[in-house]
Image 1: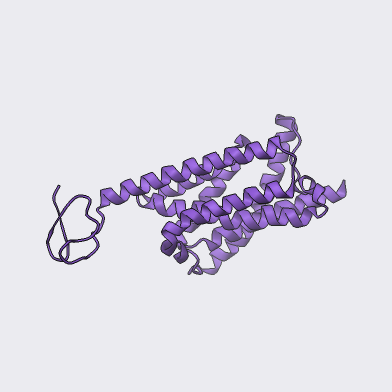
Image 2 (image 1 turned 45 degrees about the horizontal axis):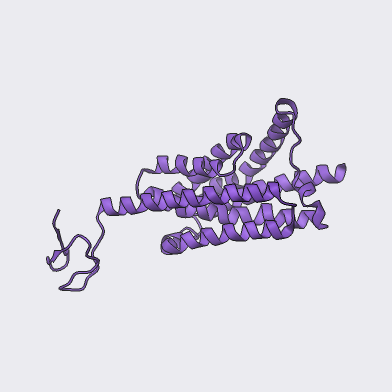
Length: 248
């Protein structure tokens, strides 16, 4: 198909990035944008799938240490930021405060209370009575550090809401919107978000949890609602863990 400059009408070669006559940048067509976004989505998914596999191996095959944990979290943050650099203008727009009515903010603070308690005791029930395995207590996991509550707060409460929301409801969401509709985008980001956690039991609750966060991201064009919910959910989980850890 022949291409012509929208500004001056000059004939353009297929690979042209700028018009040879007027110097204006050549606008990409829909198919070009769609193909580029699909390639980026595939690269994103493969990158974080490999990262999740490597992280899983390191955590299970090596002695637990703050150095290992810090290296994994730093690598994850670096990868997320690296991808977001290519879409930084659209990403920055997602950090504007949402124009949401009071009911949405009430939901934002109430929902993680219900979700955290349901998830905590549902997982405890499944592990104890169905799988007959011990449930992981994050405070106990970081007990070797001498400051388990502090490090659990950093690695579970602070970092995941910031960088997971940026990665999945930020960058990935933006790319998927270029190739499909909002409903599919919400479901796809939730599915990939749940998939990279490598746990069938966790998938059961992370997938619908991701759909809620994706819906809010789609409707209000902001990451803040998802970050607050994600933060509050993880915080309550840690506080429950701390309660049972000190009780025992």
